[in-house]
Image (tube, rainbow, N blue to C red; front, side, top):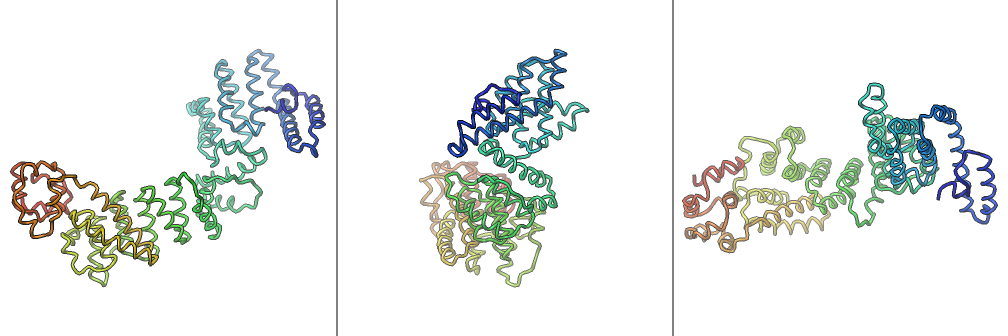
Length: 516
């Protein structure tokens, strides 16, 4: 219902008609008997008076235009509707209302379209509270990008384009749910904050973020995430961030948080040292299969708690899925000599997974090189090595061992070890899921690392063809102690060649030399 329908009159600029209509409607909607109806009438009355004042301001220009006969009645109506829509809190942020208004404009002559568009721009410039989403709608629909093509308007175009990229956080639909006072107070609060954040101006963020003002804050996830980013940047009191994190993490929503939202929450929880929240966020990341991001978050937790080996382990897990430049890892893990030689060997091998180093990749050539390596962290490293190079039989064995460690870590509330084991078990399961389903060789594969395996007879033609070339290469990399008769047969059938192994990382080149 428009303001004119509420007042029971046709659209007019005559204040006397507006006042008379108001008196009549107030008599029908007394504030004590019908407070809701009275509020609507009062709001419509105030809006109509504002429209009347604005129409008077433009009257002189409009009269001159009409005398010159330049613009049609439809153009005048479009300008009048512009003011009406902007003055109506229930319609000003309704996208369909604006699209309908724009449809009326595009049928006007080009010079009249330009005149209306300029009137809209002038209104926007006079009302800096207008949200970027609305400016973006006008930018797209009214071809304002043409402003960038003229020296006279390029600065205006750049300013409007910048404005169009400023988010109100709650969107047009969220703003439309607020009344006029709430809309203006909220936008007056969020716009300078958003500009300061976009410009990375910490001084402005600190100023606006700590202003003691009265405004309405919608219950919106994006707005709460924005507050966390702001408070995190300016060092707001830890208790406020904790309270907001607890609120957001306790929400039982059918729609999971986006990975961007989880990263914001994770960064905040990490910065204030709120480990319980950090682990909860890491769990959400894993549930959504964002393993690299979970590994990155947990690596920084491990580094903060000075757990060097787990820092390396999480770095390798992250690097497997999201490789980073060597320079990053060199600066992240400067060399420090360890007193414990077994720990040094593990760290050297883990470092070789991140950067090119001489001979460190040969520290653990086979599982036998792990003799003497005992304990939880050693078993985690074994699992990580097995994911890359371990035999399929040992993957199953180390997986069973890590499941036991995972239960122990859970009982001891050792979350950092628990998540490292969880990530490696996921990787092990991925490798096992990719094992070719070849019933012809399955029983023989299970015999690996037994004397019986080395004495197996030559492969039959059916067994040779049960795996393709790439699958045989993968098998030989993980199972270097393969009977010579198998290698001769595969080479004779031209299923494998020496250049197969040249395509593989140099760390596995040693297994190619066993035969060729």
